[in-house]
Each structure stands twice: as C-alpha cells, then as structure tokens.
Amino acid sequence: MSGTAGPSAPRGDIAGRADLELVLRRFYLAAFADPLIGPFFTEVAGTDLEAHLPHITDFWERALFRTAEYRRDAFAPHAALHLAAPLTAEHFGRWVQLWRAAVDGAHRGPVAERAKAQGERIALALLRRISGEDPGVGGEGGFVPLSAVLLRGA
Image (cartoon, rainbow, N blue to C red; front, side, top):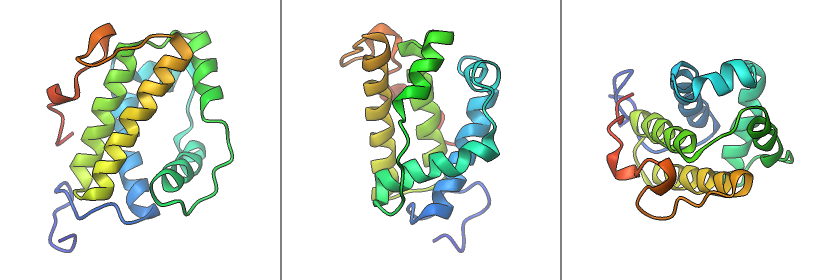
C-alpha cells in the first residue's frame, strides 16, 4: 500500500522509527503553527525540533515497539512548562487533536490506532498530574471530545 500512496495519502501501518519520525514531524509542524498550543513550543519552551526529535522518537519507539532506550523523565519538562505558563485541559485536548490528525494523515493500522490511544492516555495522565484537573468522560474541563476531531487530513 505504501508504494502507491501519494505524498499526503495515508500509508500502511506505523512500522518503525522512520514512520514515527514522519508522524512526529507532521505533528510538530501543526503544533508549532497552532494558535492555542504553538506558543508553548515556540515561545515558552523554545523547542528546537532537530534536537528534540531523536528523544521524542525514542519515547514513541519505546512506547509502541519496546525497541528503543528512553531513560528521560517525560513528566519533568511538562511540569516546568506548566509552572511557566499553566497548561489546561483545552491545551491537552488540542494536543490530542493534532496528534490524532498527524497519525491519521500518514498511517492506518493497529499500531497507528495504538499510537492515538497512547497519546490520549499520556495527555490525560499529564493533565491530571500537573494540574489536578480530571476531565472525565465527555470533555468536561475543556478537554476536546475525540469524537469531534475533524482534522484527519491535517
């Protein structure tokens, strides 16, 4: 399937690190440009994508395939970011929207579905841990219901 797909058409499932890098680049391109969460990356954290990408790819490769070493504390940078500029359920909801759109725009399959589900779990866990907010089911607290995501081709 991936041999016939166009540059923006979804390919087969996420099969490894190269596919994760593609998804992560798609995600960060959208996230950096997003008016709601972009400033957290560009202004507050000053994220250098080329420096950050190998580490976040390790994180996702470990989460999805258990093939990479990831020994960093994923919570600490988010907690520091929250202290500098409070993160809310709305911010995490937008992150989930953009993550799902990045995955869906590039890949289809069970690993892609697992990546989207894992992204949602991570967002909810980070939100609960840094802010004490618990959006629960149905999008309370500003968390965007995933059923409302219309960004599949972003």
